[in-house]
Image 1 (cartoon, rainbow, N blue to C red):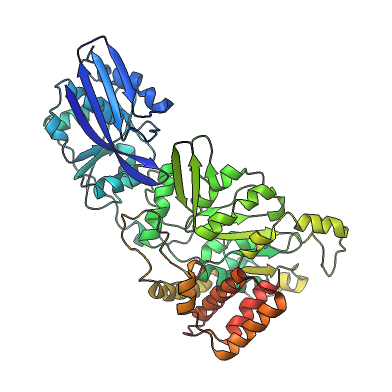
Image 2 (cartoon, rainbow, N blue to C red):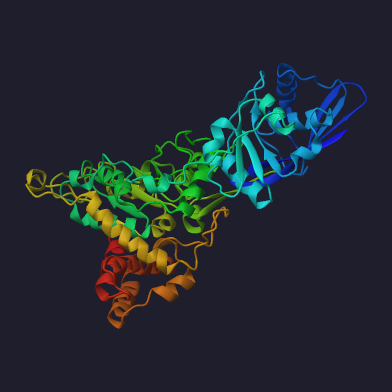
Length: 519
């Protein structure tokens, strides 16, 4: 007897439909799984067989063939356990086949029949809804993230017997409705114990960080040890605007696939802040591995990636950042499979000017040779530096600034200005932003000035004559590349937004050029 059940699987962070076909026929007792199953899927034979027996049902002692279609796509993970078990029970005439119409399901089975949580539930449910599913059976622990998708019934289940009883009409499962006010209730003030009022002096750096936060620009800080670079970087999260629902859903999908979602917080409501150690490998940074997973650049999607001591990272590791910074996504190719992970992030980096850290310092003398300084700075390539919009020097803080009575501006006050600028940008790009929650990687979406495309720059970066003259002189004097020219315009557009100006004025261009010249 033949039985079919639909479920969803994930490739990258995109879900796709998998049809689980099971045929139980007379012959020697053999249990085969076909359809390019990897090790965890092949091992499901023993889990499924034991779970069915321990749940009180007879396992057919016949020839069992399981096909996971499409058969030309590699299947990974343990989420196929539940649909395979139910298809076998249906083929054994325990559950009527027609009861499965309109339902999708996924989950890992334990040997006693309990259903364990799996990764990638959110994109799987989004895929099921797009393909007309009316209900989705998920493990109880995954019910929160699954409920973020509206328009489909989420049915949380604990055991295999619960699922059988539901489809045979012996049990009702109440659909789970998640907390739709997570974003509204969250103050979105990540790292609330970190505030810029704790940072003495460095007003020039704070201004640059405010511009970076307002437009989503990449930024690099250079200065001697102890000048406050790391302290400033860690507090950027406290001035970033809250996530929109579309941004939150995109980020949550990545964390769902990576298995980093917490049951009590099924929706990412605060912008991620990722700070990997300089010993990280290239696959760890951009993703990949034997079984591809999102890297740090994708886990920082719609948030921050902070690289402290930038020259200490291996050069080949830094070089792999260039494509994600430009395209906003990571493409990983493997034999027989390709994966795409979004990676729209702000790169915040900090570095010393030389190995000893005191090159150019007004008090401490640098002990490095010219060759050492050149070799140290040479660890960061020109093309990578060219992709960083804002470069600032962070000098040592003076004694008078450390002991002064003036109270620095708080993060809350800075964030108000940043939010106003971001609102201006969201209205500007509303025709470019796809607000459909079912969308996955919005490569065509623009949420802030840093993501502007060439046609957006021509449309929205209108310069007054005096501003155009300053930019022309800067391009000729500093030899700015075409990319640097575009990034100066984007930064100037953000500065104008902070001043609530429709057009880019000369002072906006002058400040933007200054941040390029400091490199």
